[in-house]
Length: 411
Picture 1 (spheres, rainbow, N blue to C red):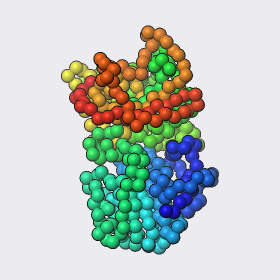
Picture 2 (cartoon, one colour):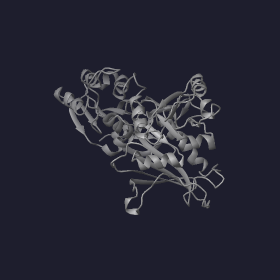
Picture 3 (cartoon, rainbow, N blue to C red):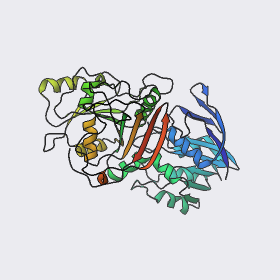
Picture 4 (cartoon, rainbow, N blue to C red):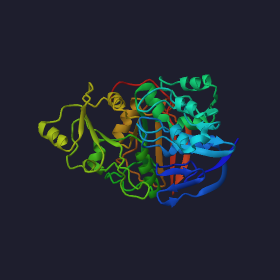
């Protein structure tokens, strides 16, 4: 199989942001700066996976897809998904290849679409361009596709193959896969703690437990998700901005996730920092706001959503469903302890990302990362699967996935 060089990025797992774009085969730029190529040779599907990661953060609710067209041992076209309503990865690659697409082989990280949405079907474009063979890393679970795209290509005489690097392709689009099949966003619990499990001192001081390297990575995470969620206590104690910063050349990017505050009694002050930042904010309450507070929120452009549960708290599953209906496919939950505990109690977490710093804080009154009811026996504890361990300076990031369990209706 043809092999090619891939973009060099800061870390080996290719944590990419969408500032790098292909110019021509083998030549790449990031703004005005050339991107160095590594000496590692990898196959064309892995190259396509790297391109797909470039699309993370601005294609939602569409999946992030990468495509590479190869002909006679040469890359003739590359592309990755553009923002919703614009060209898909396959079309970008075809446009770059032009007439050289005829007889070429396409390596794409997701089955090409075969239906009309905001854009025409990619399958028709591939057939008309005369592509000879299509390798897809995975079938698109979208009920409107789900194998129909590959079947259409095969009927047109195009050779098809599915399954190369499927696990990696599924990880890139884990949020899209959950949302398109369930209507619910993919929920990641993120927290930073000391070696003894504390997220703050007994006086609520938490700046900073995690290293600068870890905090910079969190800004990249925020850039790639549709929404960032916190509880009202986090707003009252830390007054966070909840923006994606330090991306690309630094500063605050214009692309910002939706900020969601779970605030049962509407205690978020109108002077909170998160109301002063670019992007949109949603406040989820369990009881109507008083008229003055509601008018103040409206003037700030804040969306207030009432989701009452029987115990007077916000119904978290209904909140996630409401976000899914707004085409929010991914949510990064950054605390605090009470909100994370409720989400774990209700089995609403899909992935955990825990930054552990080499600190000992101590103190019976210092908060731990996850509150809530918890479990009575260790045998009932949440055990992560597909665990990864990474270093950020002196900090360690432990990430993993939680298996699906029966879920409660409220918290």
